Image (cartoon, rainbow, N blue to C red):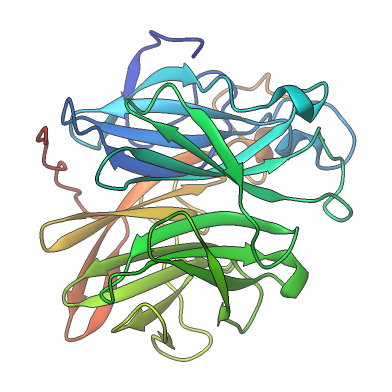
Length: 322
């Protein structure tokens, strides 16, 4: 890792190196009881062609005792392989789970720094770790296409693991693969269709399973009893995190999130672009509309519906070593 030792700051969280924290994923460190946030570290100040600034990203870590105040630790090293060719390469949207023996990361990996969206393969890479800092490459997963990103993994009520991804080869819908042992995966097909979306996140709360997906206008919500069949909450236009929150840096839609379940509530970490029209606190930044901030909102299940409280008081996450 690099760039360790920078100061903590409360939510909203900003990447103190680039200002481009996106796609947060949060997991408890089972040794310390602290919480660890993995985030895509975009390069908003990069004056390069097209969407190069969204590529060439690293994965940055921050830690917190309570899920509210975060201290930046640095970036993950060693995620590229000798055979990948000269870098830098692109690292996006890691999913990190505990499998009962070790941590596993499912990382979106792209060769080089593309300056446009089409024409560049994406792959989900799997890594293992004992401490959430040092990661060992295991393999590239063979999934529904070579245009898959934004992995999410959960252990369903039938005892099987499932891995959901955004498949850009299928109009940016969510596809799913299943496994009995996290070693052999079989593609089951499209899990969620409808309008294009990304960033599927699956969790259990209030006696049901839920999936939230980023529709770039807020997040669509789906419910399931078995993690196989999903039914949308409300009509096709119902979303959460579409209306601004009260914080001055939470005025845009909520993007690509991760849910931590803590007792009878969930905490949804998501990111926003607070200054789409400029006006960022750093007047010298060349592209203030690209800067991002990570926020949190509380989720509860009320009368069978997932309810999101954006801008409400977020109680600290419990802190327990396992």
